[in-house]
Length: 325
Image (cartoon, rainbow, N blue to C red):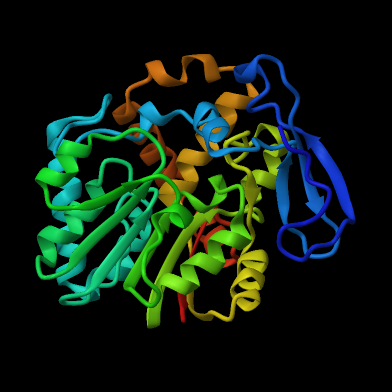
């Protein structure tokens, strides 16, 4: 483990301890991990941290995320997957619908379509999202970065170019990609400044980076604190819109837009935080995904207006920022 003595964003050594992370201690052999915050810029991070990619992968539950293209994840149905795929295609082909799809983020990911463009998905798992874009925009070239396990033959069969390792180790040419996506990954990166520097290097001039992360300024995090579902050893850094904008400024990116998470996603996060608070996390993986979505939807219907207000006030559970070089 590596103990951080200064902030990755601003370099300040003025750090304050917030609390221990109840969401992760029991699952990691009783080791104590604290949440710290930089007094100067507000960036929050786990301390101590894994000192290598191998350690991070050991702490991250990969089996939840990685499956072959076309394979139905455990707990989901074929009908659900087909429905979500149709929603994604509808979203891409009908720009007027994008305000509606805000309600479903991150279940339907936003993307920029560029004919003949080069795409990179950092933390792409088995390449499912890349393949979705490829079906809509077949003229593009599709690349992925994945440090964890995935079926290399499967991604080759679908003509995706996925590198096993880190962004820095891939050694892509300068000014190479038109669009880079980092969905629910940047919070797991142990070297955010180095990652941002490399992203800028491989992105074309006027290219777009789309980063989505949990919101470190969310009401749920304020309410649940150390019991929040947003926290855990694998979420090495916790970002607010303010700290993300400071990273953009540090590496000379222009901010195109900032979106805040959907009411449906906020409902799911609230339910998961309640389960952690009341000691129900041991049963988490035994609950089918469709059941979690069902209760999230009920909560969403009952509390739609107050949760929508949270999003308007920028206190939602997730942030998506679009940056241009």
